Structure formats: C-alpha cells, structure tokens
Length: 550
Image (tube, rainbow, N blue to C red):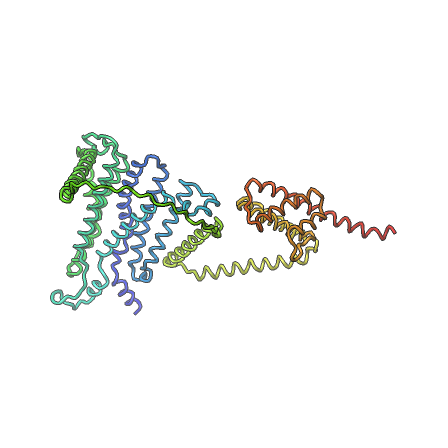
C-alpha cells in the first residue's frame, strides 16, 4: 500500500520537467547578459567608477538571479507549499542585499568607522553605490523569478496528471480538465525575450565610443568592449535555446494529454540538436559583414530630437493661439505699492528643547537592522528545513556549561583569595572603569564634561572618607575639602566648583576653551585625594607604635 501511495504521489508531479537544475542556470545566464551590458553602460557614463565596483555589480546581480531561479524551482514542489509566501521571498531578498552591503564595504567603500556608524547611520548604510547595486539586484532577481515561473507553468500540472491515470476516461466528449494555455505562455516568453534583446542592442549601441568598420569578423571591429559583444551573442543564443525548450514542452504536453505515443529519444536528444543548430547559426552571424551600432545610436538620437522638436513646436503654436484669443490691447495700469507700516514682532523667549544624545538615533537604527536581519535569516533558514529547536537546545546546554564553570571559579576564588586581594581586585576594576570613562569623555559636550568632572570628584572623595553631607552646598563641601588638602589643590577645587555652579545653577554654558583648564584642576584634585589615602595608613601605623614607645 505504501508503494502504491508513493507511486500516486510521484505521478501527480511532473518530475521530468520541474526538477531540471540546468534550466535555472541558463535563465540566470540569460539575465546576466543584460546585466553585463547594463553595467558596461553605467561604467561608460560614469568613467570614474572603480572596476571593482563594476565587478561587484555583476557578481551580486547574477548571483541574485541564480538564487531566485533555484528557489522558485524548489517552491513548486508539493512539499514546499507552506513556504510559498511573500515573507519567505522577502527574507531571501533581504539576505541577498545584506551580502551585497558587506561585499561593498569589504572591497570598494572600506569598513566604516564606529563613530560614523553611530552618528551617521543612513549615510553609512544607504550610500549611492549600494542603492544602485540594490536596484540591479532587484531587476535581476525579478526577471529570473518571472521567467522561471513561466517555464514551470509549461509543465504538466497535478490535475492533468491525475486525469491521465484514469484509463477508462474517453478521449472525446466532455473534458473538464483545467489546462494551461501553453500557447499564451510561449508568446509571453517570446515577447519578453524580444524586449530584452532590443534593450540589449540599445545598451550595446550606447556603449560604443567611436566609429566601427565593416568586413569579416565585423563584431570585433566595433569600438565596443568585448564583454558586451559576447554578452549580446550569448543572450540571443540562449534565448533561442530556451525558445526551443518552450516549444518542446508545449508539444510534450499536447502528446500526453491526447494520449498519443511519444518517443523518449526525441525528448532526450532535443537539446543536442537544438544547441548544435544554434551554434551553426551563431557562427554564420559572427562571420557576416555586419555594420556597427554607432549609426544606430545616431539614428536613435536623431529620431528622439525630431520627436521632441515636433512636440515643442505644437505646444508653441497652441500657446500662441491662446495668447491671440484671450489677450487684450488695453494697458493695465499698475497701482503703486503702498508702504505698509512696520509692526515690531513681539519677542518671545525661545525655550531650547531637550536634545537627545547624537548617538541615540544611530544606535536605534542599527538595532532595528540587526533585528530585521535576524528575523529574515530565521524565516529563510526555517524555509530551507533547518531545525531551530535542536540549535536552541544546544545553546541552552552550552550556556549552562559555561555558567557551571563560572560558579566553580567563583567558589575557588572565594576559598583561595584573602580579603586584601579581593579589595585590590575591586580597585583594579574601578581603575578600568575610570579608564573607559575617560576614553568616552572627549565625545561629550563641554557642559557634560564639567558635570562629569565634578560628580567623579564627589565619588573619589567619598571613596577616601570625604563624603558630601545631605543638604551641603557645593561651596560648603569645597571649603571642607580645602582643609584636607594643600592650598594649590584647594584652589583647583574652588575653580572646579565655580565651573559646576555656573552650569548647574546659573544656567550658563561653558566655553570649549575652558574645558582643558577644568580638566587639569580635576586631575590635580584626584592626585591630591590619592595622596591623602597614602598618608592615612602611615598615621595609623604611628598611632599603633606609640604605646610601645611608652
């Protein structure tokens, strides 16, 4: 029974046509020919573009066409119905764009600085080169998906294959089968191929620099890049090859639906005969004394100028007739403009709104990009059959193991280290924290730097036994601090206190030139407090030695 069910499942799907892996590659090559000509035209109008950028455009676009064609071929299978959603395809496209963004940073633009990524996220991420590359990827991916869908629709569908299994069904009579209009599909592919060919010829003509010459091997005599000429030849050869496969699919479906016997050798040998015939035609076309495309570009420019000139002439005549019909000979006397009395605008004090930190917008932007990228990766890999439950279980075990290692290390440290060593470890961590704070200090505004100087001085004084009392004013604390340090250090403390009071209570801004002086005073106070801590243990030792002397 299982074998019968499996046979029925296999019979409801046209594996001979739908499982082809060569067809998406040929379609990607067909789209890549147009992209080669398009990138050559872009480099022609923008001679300053680096060659590495042109190569990145071609590689990422052709790769997007290849991925789009193979994914579309995979999704047509019966077991992939749940993944035929716009979310899955958008995730696939987002991952391709992310790879292109990384490739541009690594090869052409260089890796951006962290400060630029945080302060100018849009300027770093959405550069002009990336936008152009994204448009190329969208064009290539969309063309490959459309053409692949047309070819997949030409195969035998599930309802057609199900009707073929009923041997008792008469050939003539009432036939309610829903058949694909393969003739319309053939015409649609032919129209798209012809439109793409005309676009390719226009781009090839626009990429020509000078006048070509006629004769044998005329294609190599044109002043056009060899890659563009080769892309044009390959495009038409591959298009004709795909067109023969389209007609083969239509005849194959007609034979099977009409229950006519068909030779398997015809289907098997068809690609070799078609490709050989096309090679002969391409070789003959290559040897013909064809003219260049420079005259074609001139004729196209002349036609466009003639059409635009005719349009401007017709518009000029229409405007002249309207002026004659509605115009009047009476002169319009303009009244002198009256001087309006000047009214002084009331002066309103502008309240400065609270400004957000400059790094906040960039940080939020990159967090959103990371979340979208992670979600797209999750959707795409889940659609590809990746089991995330196993990965999450492995991560939980991994984190649990590291947590156990950390707990064991803390227990060992608690048994081995003395209280003095623990205090020295805390002091070392505080030093590292202060070093990181000083590293980020130069990016703050002048007022914020002064606030940091004063608040960190309060923290340092509290660590050394001079904690600020509740309700104590800054000047009272500065006077009490001056009694514990030298006169020069007391002057520095007074200078820092004046700067803080001016900002916090007088609402006056600090000039950038005054920040180095305040920083020097802050450093001097910290050194004085550190020296105060060194003198305190010495006084304790003297107090312990006094009873022994007595």
